[in-house]
Image (cartoon, rainbow, N blue to C red; front, side):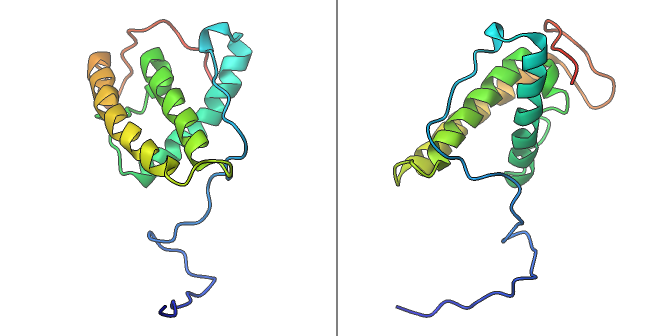
Length: 138
């Protein structure tokens, strides 16, 4: 076995990004958005926004997959929430060793659905064009 080079603790670069998300622990719990009050939906959206912001940056996604106004379109909220749930399950400390690989396979399939949903919104950079029922403001 070869020795690994140690890297200085102060180095912060794109390959070794700083920690931005907590390590998932235990089983992931699905959210039924339609069963939540507007206040609960706002709280869940705030948590989801943190993860979506990380996802977009980490995987270099653009508006064709996740437009800036994703949280104003239920179809995108539902898809991203499901993807987040799968991510939590795949990267939880209790996950099977191949769960992250399965998540990446689901992520690949999800990107085509996200692109389809995003294109259906008709949204472009600039003023928002709302087509779906209103989502509570964060």
